[in-house]
Image (cartoon, rainbow, N blue to C red; front, side, top):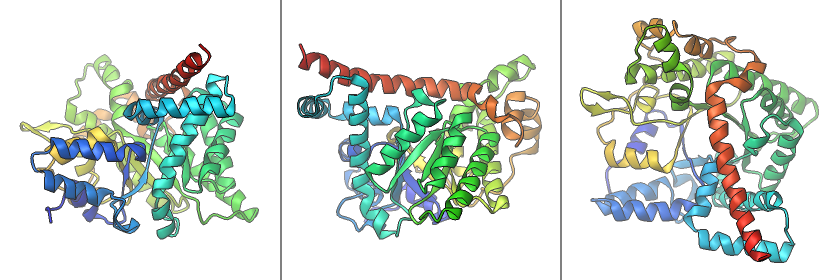
Length: 398
């Protein structure tokens, strides 16, 4: 048996923490093959990946406990096997009479989510609905339309009870989270970067749960997670820009500390409140910073020991498994960020507002630069899926 992988060593610091696959489950098999083919120690890599997920395992033996997806990741499922999905779309056009590319896109997107949910349904059932959720995201192009998002969420959840709905951290998104929670539909708050957003999500969930309980809604298949898109906060927003404007330079390590500080505080708030029964979810992690010539992964090393979800996309997993053997994990979630670093960061309004619980009003969420940049990226990926099916429609009517 191969030694423990870096992922297993992280998980063992707190076995209540969860490792999630951050991509469509339907691409895992091809990704696994590529990883093994490129590995210098193929047997070891095979054993590591099989312990992450293998169809032959009992569900509870797989280290992956759930799945997150987003529009770029869902489009990757199509890019992974374009010939198959071209045929599948062509069949839908012929059998279902589609003429509208938007409707056909949504039909295709739901099929990708449905197939992913089927893969994790055995774990969902074996764990008595504790694990095995897969996130399906509402269309990011409609992130300000409450009724549209609620309607899409209901459609996605109707595909399978283990479909958790990804809802954006816009002002409108938190109203959607409240409504979905009141209906017993599990949610994942995405496009969220700041403490005020996380607090708004907790408040929305608490209110939704009060409504659900008052109405006798079944909550046995409900969960909530709040995503902290960590590196996107530091790299897509105004952190560096505002530092320069104030005559400061931020090192790579200090940018990472800014992101880690927000996540540590979020975990602390979840524990202190006591009324929010969900978990923080850490995504957008990086192999960074480089310290004394060695590449670290502070996003994991400095928060190890937390009862949270770590969601790992294929490129990040590749880096961890291939180049992360030197990383060290011990319980550090409650260790404070160095005070000198915090003092420096708090002089930057972008960080201060993101760190303070009342740093933004709910209405101001919609203009947060990291949210706008990420929403633009996700919307563009969604449009690529629309363009893919539109081309199939064009050819079918050519």
